Length: 289
Image (tube, rainbow, N blue to C red; front, side, top):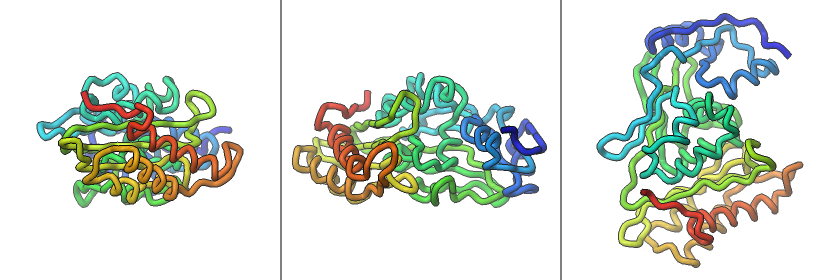
C-alpha cells in the first residue's frame, strides 16, 4: 500500500522545524529515523498533511557524557551509534540493550528518541529509560521542558508531547555509586519485537543497593515500571532472598495477555526469570567498566 499524499519539508535548523510544527500541530509528523513512521505511512495508519524531516539539523546528531556522568542522546543519534559507542561503559543497561534493538538495518537508521516517543508497548528503549530514571527533553513555543520517563508514554502509541513540540534529547543520569544492569529479551527470531523484555539497573555503594530500576517490555498496554520490585532492593544487599522478592514483585506487576506468542502465565514466568538473571542470579548482570 502507498501512503496518503503529504507535503514534505526538510528544515535546516531547529527553529525552522519548530515553526513548522507550531503551524501544523498534529497534522505534522516529525521524521528522524523513520523506522516506525514510514511503515505507519505505508499502511495508512498515519496520514499527516506534512512530514517534517529533521535529518538536516546537525546539532541533534550526538551523544555525550557530561562532567556529572549524565549521558545526553540527541534526537538524531542512531541505535547503531550507541551500539558502537565507547561512552556506555558507565551505563551498562544501555550497553546491553543497544545491540538488541530490532536488526542491523533498523539500527543503522532508527533513533533512541524516536523509538521512545513512538511508544510501542514492545519497544525496548522505553523500558530502559524507565529503569534508568531518564528524562526526555522537548522544545516548543513555550520553551524547553523535561518530561520524566514515567510520564513520557501515556498509552499504546501515545506520548505526552504537545502537538507543537519536538523531542530533542534523552538524558540519562549518571550512577550514584557503582552501576550494574542488563537488558534481557525473549524474541521469536532475531530482530523481532519482544515477547518479554526486562531492563534492570542497579547502583550500589559498599555492597548495598542505593538505587534500582526495573521495567518490563511487551507485557502490558505500555512499558511497565516495576516500582515495588525496584524499591524492594534499595538499602539491601543483592542476595538470593532479595533477588527472589524483586523477581516475584516484577512478575506481579506484569499485565500480560495470552496470544500467539505465549500464555499470560508463561510471560509472567519469563519476567520472573529475567529479573532473577538480570540481578545476577545467573551471572547476566553487567557492571560498569
